[in-house]
Image (cartoon, rainbow, N blue to C red; front, side, top):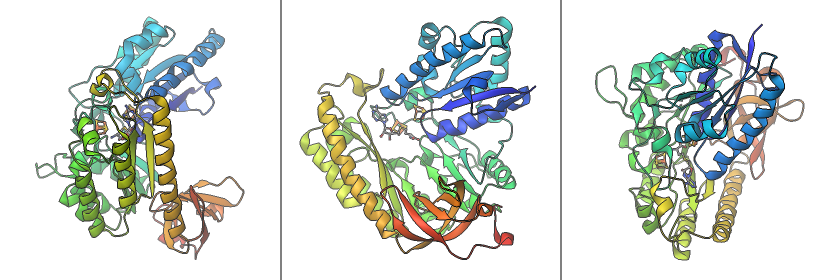
Length: 452
Ligand code: SAH
Ligand code: SF4
Ligand code: F3S
């Protein structure tokens, strides 16, 4: 009988990609995915270390799994594995605090999961694999299995930017770009399996500089162009980018490549130069504004998203006002915002002038109120417009489908189920704060559908 694998994923899209790849690696051992943790023979928690809150969730989930493991003892048992960025940062501590955990593995070693499972079952001892292997895991992974019309594809991993608040350079390691040929092979295999929308992933994705077939380093703009040429790929996105690494080629790609969606998530973190300098972001607020101007000149329809941190050490009222002013000037379609969370081992955690929690709460509320207003305005500006939406989920109500607009909003439409997993032309009829309602225009004929 097939064994059952349950994976819980925390954190960013890279972790979502990694979770799917871990399932691919374990499939030949007879593990099939389950959504019911109670029936699992193996559980993987794929963890995130970015903020303290993310880390706490892992330990409380482990407490619940311990009880499940006890209940299953004698009935084949339960293998518990902790993967991802908490595992990388705190492997030893997890093993000590949770002795019932069988395997702790970092983000760069999961191609070796079959050996780890064998070791854990055979020897009955805890396995810890958190080194950064010289050979990238990508060389050892099986071809990906597609799950629906949209897929993630990791092209770049790790980060050399060392923003002073961030754990990613420590948990994911140094920047690495996959060779162009490997990326194109994976994209073609996804397209062959019915995928029509690919999101290219990297912790610093626009720092991509993979080796091309010509032996030269290719930037992200050129890579996007090559993926756009693959038959079946109708839509391309990428995330997450750093303002320092937006090249002329990438800006030109937004102008020239119709498959590249008019949406860019470009974290700025703060609008105050003093804060940006202490964050080690290597750009000023004026640099960011200029960059946005150049991007909008190339693609006037570009919708923007960003990340903000409030309450970074030493952030004054005037600094925070500068962040609000930058948001007013740029105008975002959406954004993520976080209270600064001191992370062990990062330079900012040791800085003086840590900001009181109550002050962080006030600033977060003010920033989110402004971003919320901008998002509503952006959504309202879409009413009456027509655009192509990849309908990839059933809606909450019968007869309803949901998809993503080119600008990443959720769009609801009444449409027959046969149109699930297709790209359809819709007209927006109403805007909500977090979604759009639309009506179906003439359904695209089946023979024209790239991903049926
Ligand atoms: N490049 C990564 C960024 C991961 S971190 C990616 O691919 O997503 C995502 C966001 O979390 C950052 O842009 C930043 O706004 C926020 N963040 C990172 N470290 C943080 C910390 N210590 N406290 C609060 N927010 C943080
Ligand atoms: Fe973290 Fe900065 Fe690298 Fe983004 S660019 S992953 S925030 S260190
Ligand atoms: Fe979290 Fe690691 Fe992603 S810390 S945000 S899972 S890179």
